[in-house]
Image 1 (cartoon, rainbow, N blue to C red):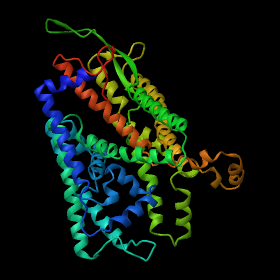
Image 2: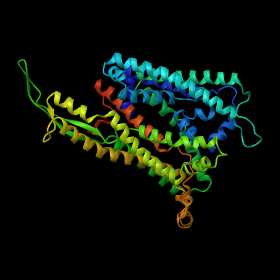
Image 3: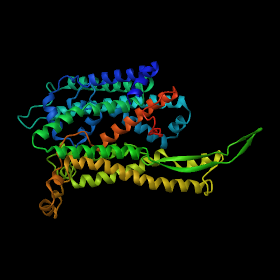
Image 4: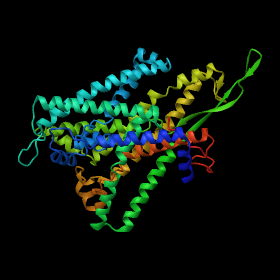
Length: 462
């Protein structure tokens, strides 16, 4: 490991890329501490601590804690991610964007330009909504408002500040992607999540001082490491379909005849299904915050709080649904089978064309189910450890569960450790991507990488 790190700084181009990436991330973290003018930061912090299971807590995850303080980078990369997902979905249903996506580099640049425009629009829309919402909110004690001087000037200032911050983050991500290492947006999210790690370690230390036994903390850390190892194992998992290419005579040369394989990843959807499921389930709770007088919305809000049985059930179902939905968008077995037949390829024992497409679709459906269950477990188990599953809130049988279920299962560990499913998947996935990028750069220049001697080279997630 030490020798590999030394090799990085021996190569001028790779050294400059690493240092440039670290510099851009440092600028991002610096902006995460510049507050937006006119905000009562202490009351806003208390509000976020009491509403972690709403969309506010979800947005705070992608802003690296900037949203709860409403800094200039409060919107984070969320507008850009939303714009990218919208453009990706529209590419499937809008022939114009589908045509652009097949035009090579020029088409991709055009789609990137549309993504930027949509990011600006979403940033303006979200910042105005945040400003209007903050003006209406007051604290429970004394009715003190979150905004020091409410009015049109505050709305305009907040919209300009947050939109400019979001655009600057988009620029930082593109610069890291072009002149740094790896995907810039993913690294920015990674930096925001990892920045909260010292606070999490401090909280565990305070829990130990309050009476947590040392063996219990060791077991907790061992479970965390086991989950991380399981994520790495599954993220690298593939189902390889053998493909044989027939020999063809082109001019005076014999082409083809080689054997290869079609890799199908176990988790083709990545973290996107978890993000979709979290965002969808956070909306009812958020609406309930502003309609506490409505009995129906209040009951729905209480039933869909983070950690409640109904929330956990719907969360798992939503993850499985969005996993199949997203994989069906990004992978088309019919198109793969047609391209394979066009170049003289076939799966041994399977007729080309429709039979091949059905065969690939059957395998993809089976491994996608495994990937969906894996995502659901990774998302639910850490949250269960943090907040528990409130079985005592179930109707009819709640009292029985309350009397026969250990307190640890009902209440959880009550640790605000950054160990949630979404954040954990992002951190591990981005770390694997970054290592793979550096590994490929070192191998290309005939240096040993991080995985020397293992006989295995790390594969990228995409």
